[in-house]
Length: 294
Image 1 (cartoon, rainbow, N blue to C red):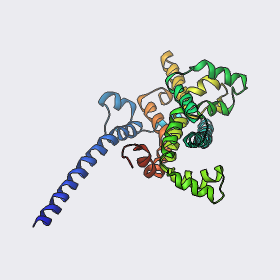
Image 2: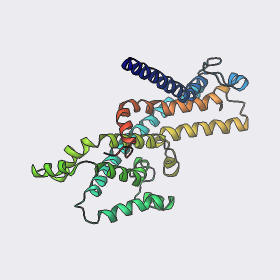
Image 3: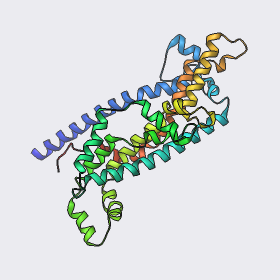
């Protein structure tokens, strides 16, 4: 009887949690659903009746205004994909090496180095030092100007170090007894056991690179090197200027509308969303670092 009551209570609790989780998921997904619906709606209908879950007066004018020059959008996609891939790969490699080094107790002055890294999270030199470095190295109007300034994060290095410090020293010592050097130990022992934190940081890095437009506004004047976000930003600005002067020679299909803004959001965020499912299982583990003591 007790066992039957216990299983019934557990079943009820499970139903309750699933119901709450479903409601929260719907609430979280609702804004994105409204954005998709709005991007497929007629601008006049949105202004008159507001947003809805289903499109009001189905229209693709918002997307047509973005893809008036498809080759430019294709180039912007290519730049963003390269910057995101290269920046994430190089940045993760650099920060993994640095985090592993300061996690090892045999490294001399590791606490001093860790403090210097931590100090930069409290006090920053601002924009001027980076601008001087980029211009002195001749990186202006170079694809690397979009990668190098964001390639390393002090906060992520400290996260990697803290995670790697939880790896038992016995595993590292046994690898060394087998004749493995530091590089082999890192690649074959430490990195496989650090997948949760590395995947989490890879996701954060990829999102930061994909969504960045500010570096392009500072260092890139060649339109062929504009990433997607900055390209869309300029399309919207150009359309806003056309609308502000009331240019009669342009059709309403290319004027800035609510649908165009929403279509911008879909075009910009759509591709990066597909990255999350591949990293989800590692993301959940990595984001909860320190929540449970081993």
